[in-house]
Image 1: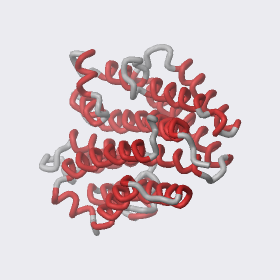
Image 2: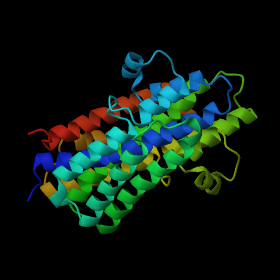
Image 3: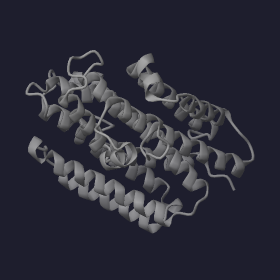
Length: 315
């Protein structure tokens, strides 16, 4: 029997917001590491807000991009629906709505994570406390994901959940790469310098990929290899290509389960094939990395809307 649209929506958005909470922490981690290389770090903190897609609402509340304001807004501000705390609370609300579709282990890990983070983020986080808090966020989201993959039946519930995870992950990997673009434009004099190498390494560390990068490329951190790893490498679990392989697989399973294809299936395959079209990261850089990422984020949002329409999330 097909899932009700609201159940599919609850699963999709529960997992999107779990992923969003983790990736907001990773975005902050990327910005924090890059800001450490510049004594005047206001521009770097602004780049985080811009890449998070919350520039306008942030400006309505704050007149500057001082680190403490950005950290508070992205971690715990209730007026920011994409803050870590807001995201985890929304994930929990959706999880409670679809409680009967989840195993007991998944629900308990989600509820526990919300309680732990709500307690820790009850007060502002000082900049010196930020690394430990970001690690806590990543541990709590990993706990939910681990119980999900370890206990859930591989059926349409699993597929809708995976769609939420990988649509959100693709969006956030693109945004983390865009932080680097805003901080150090391609024609900047620091390109190729030790500072440049450090910043690309910081991007990889923020997505826990620095060791995997070394296994794959056997070289120092470079712009082209890092872009290749996070966009085109199909063995890297946070890359855009890997995410779209998982999205296409989940939609394929749903098509077989329900016996029909919709517009979202065509769109996902088109995006998957478009990523396969690139043979090297240099092709993306030559055509414009920022423009590529902007288009990717826009197309990814379009796919999410098509999934919602095809599976009647709001009926």
